[in-house]
Length: 186
Image (cartoon, rainbow, N blue to C red; front, side, top):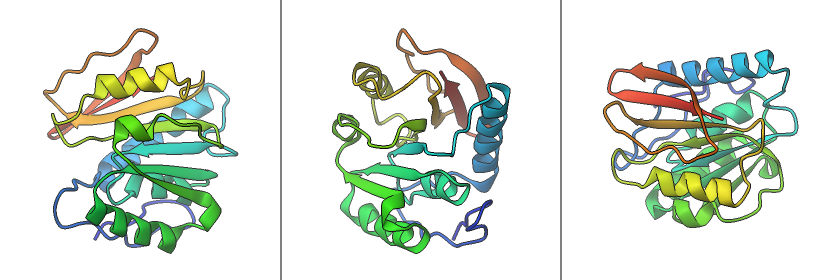
């Protein structure tokens, strides 16, 4: 069982479904948050205080729960698999207060079409490799004005996968970890 790697819930174990989910490794999670925290310092913004994360294809919720542990106000989890949803709910109940999370039990392209009451500073997209149209999700994020000026979008995909980045978004950092590519967009 993986655990939270930093913050007030450091070392708390997180339950992961035995199939259907590919949890983000501790190495990649540390890299993601290190890059995000460096970005926030360089741009004089606080990615945690009074902000939220939207964790699309949430799975066990590791990224959103890591953000809560580090001080983010709220995590929104979008997940559409019922068995994964149950484990995600248990993980959220273990780590979060009720006002610190919301689980949106819908397909990603539908779940993103709503208003979020806490402004997102991070949108994390980690679909099953080569199975989802990330471009469509990015277009909906832009169309629905979910991404604000300082919001960073992080995409985790298979390292050889190519995605079309819509106009208005720019990849400002790319990292490869084994079979995985991380893209940071603004």
